[in-house]
Image (cartoon, rainbow, N blue to C red; front, side, top):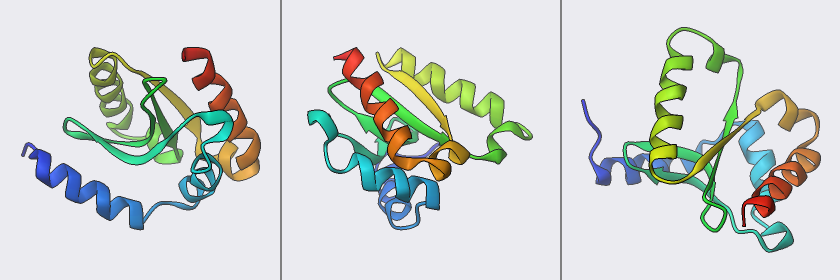
Length: 118
């Protein structure tokens, strides 16, 4: 069943309130607009909801936990990445484990990557 734009927005709002621990930790770093780069969390894009998005850098950031390597998730992630690319953006995937181990360092790497796209 295809998601309507309104349903996608409502789901994004719900997901902002129920983010996983790695996403919360990363958001605590990215919400401060590090080095002047603005990020959004749980940003709707077509039928998808991006974990984080930098509009200026046209960069989607996806935090991948262990489930992203199981079942049909790799194919679903590939379809999402292709959609994001078709929209003129790039997807940067980071592991949830890396965020948990060093949220500040991972945020610094993301910001550096985003700055390189500006």
